[in-house]
Image 1: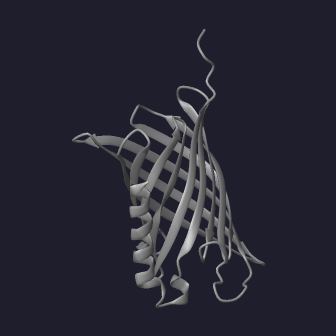
Image 2: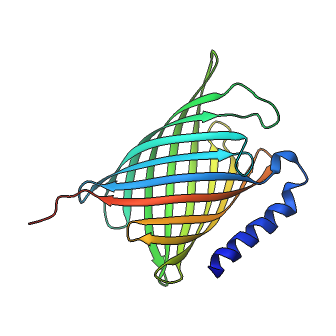
Image 3: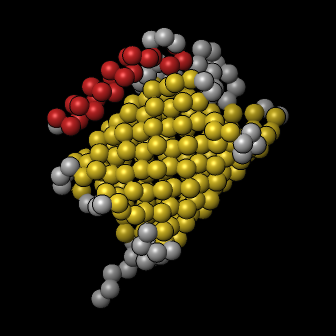
Length: 224
């Protein structure tokens, strides 16, 4: 419990230090569900739903739903192919027409340890197809995420990520996401993460509290 209180207090103090200067930098929220469903020794299916809010529990910003297939090349290397659908509300102050997105991405994840500290590297290339009224556009984006997991005990862990995002058309870094959370193991196949995400995009320094549910299931046939 003390770890959870520390994460919450740090998140609130950081958010309060910045969010009052600009209405668009109010403390928002991200809610995430992610599942990995193993169907064979090499193959698994990923599912994700994510809802973003401009403010803590109101003022809708974005929803993303996706499903993908993963192929385990080795114990440390996994490749993925996925499709996602997004609904984007870009208007903070007033209602604006939503933008709808169809997204395809290819991904490589590599894991290793440095002095018993685990690290994971995620490389992702996205093809994004936007539709707003009669206007359509296409964008390509590269993402790299470096993460680690610090185990505190059997029930608790700390998750740390930093992700760089670059739009390939502009060939510049367009966004950075720094994430830290306290993880609570509900069971061997399920955990909850409560944390803070700092998102820097388009000159804005945004602060988001995040709650996530992560599950793993195994549908392989048991050997008799």
